[in-house]
Length: 288
Image 1 (cartoon, rainbow, N blue to C red):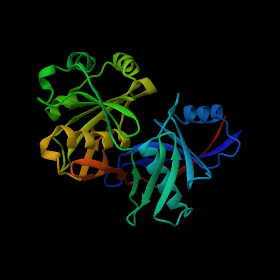
Image 2 (cartoon, helix red, strand yellow):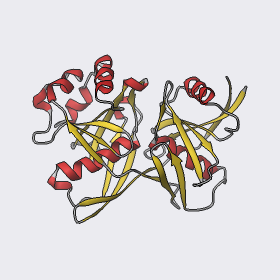
Image 3 (cartoon, one colour):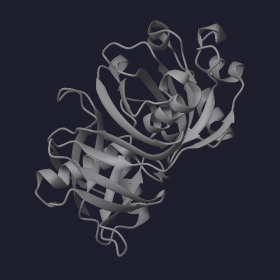
Image 4 (cartoon, rainbow, N blue to C red):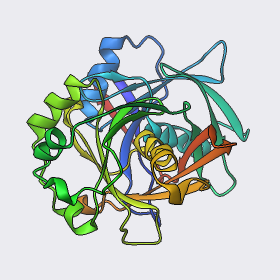
C-alpha cells in the first residue's frame, strides 16, 4: 500500500529549526495497525492522521514511532499549517476531536497556528534525588523553592527546574533510567527548564521522552503549556503573566520557539493556548 505523507517542522524560529512532524491526510481505510506502521516508518517523534468527524471539524489521531498518544502540539501546528498552505481551510477557528477531548485551533493571519490545551492538572511533587540522578545532575543545581512536579495540559510531564543555563545544556541524561521513571509515574517524559535564556524568552527547555522512543525533542507544545501553568502556580514573578515564550532545541542544533498564552480569572487559569510557526511542507510517498 502506497501512502502520501507530508513533513513539516513545527515551532520554527525565524523559519529555522523546529520539530519535524508527519501528517497524513488520506486516511480512508487505514487501520490502527497501518497508522502505527506509517508512523514507525516515518520515524518522526509524532505523526498526525486526519479524519472527518461528526461532532467537530476534524478528528486527529497521533502516533509516535511505537505508540498512539492522546494529543500532540507540534503535530497539530504542522497539520493546520499544511492545510492552510494547500488552501484546504478558510476559517480562522476550527475544532478537533482528539483522545484528550475536543480542542480548538486558531489560524492567525501571520501563519501562526495555536492550539487550545486542557486546563492544567497539578499532580504529585517528586523526590529530587530520584530525578536528578537520572539526569546526572547535582541536586544543588535545581532552583530552590520550586518543586519537581507532574503537570498536565493533556499529557503528563515531569517539570524540572534548573538554576543555570550552563548546567541545563551540560545535562547527560540516563535514558534507560528516565524511561523507567516515566513508566513508574505514568508520564510522557521530563521537561527540564531554566529561567536563564539565550534570547528574550521566558525559559530555555530540554525535553526527554525515551519511553516513547524520543530521546530528546526539539520543541514540545503540550510540555511548554504545562510549564507556563507551573510557573504561574510556583513562581510569584509569573502570577500575572499571560504570554510565555519558550526556547528549545538549541543543544540539538534545531532552535525552536513555542508561544503559550494563558488566561486567568482571580488567579484561576481559565484558558491555555500553545502556538507557533511551521515550515513549508515536503511531500513523499511511502509503502507499508
